Image (cartoon, rainbow, N blue to C red):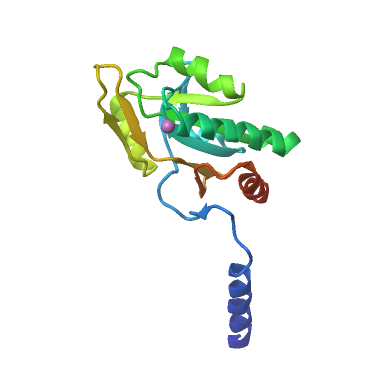
Length: 187
Ligand code: NI
């Protein structure tokens, strides 16, 4: 029995030393695993609604000059590269600027990148709660006028697997290929 356990331990070690994901493996994380928000069609959504799909969830704002459009563009390339498997990947964009990113604004902006992408928003309180749940930082940076502020925010996306478990944190601006490889491992 002892020998068997030792052999199993070795096997486990061997499994761990396999080349890992290109992105940060957060398997087992107790965060990034739930939300309750409204989508750009007005429907209430929780993470459980997307069970059975790989979810890529990103926090940003539609007036973002660089990080957000780059990330969404990258995800359209990822979906293209996945071909038929793209149907199993759901991209979610959560606004951290609900003051300006209304349902109408999100309905214009988010599916503009890919018709399958879903924009999500909440009240200021729901937004704060969700960001905390996903360990996402955001902060208003005042501009010259009341409405011309910008937002600092965490650049990066989470991948939730088909059973609703958080698995990866995707680094910003790495190109589609490493993401495609990681998503294929989770499909
Ligand atoms: Ni941004």
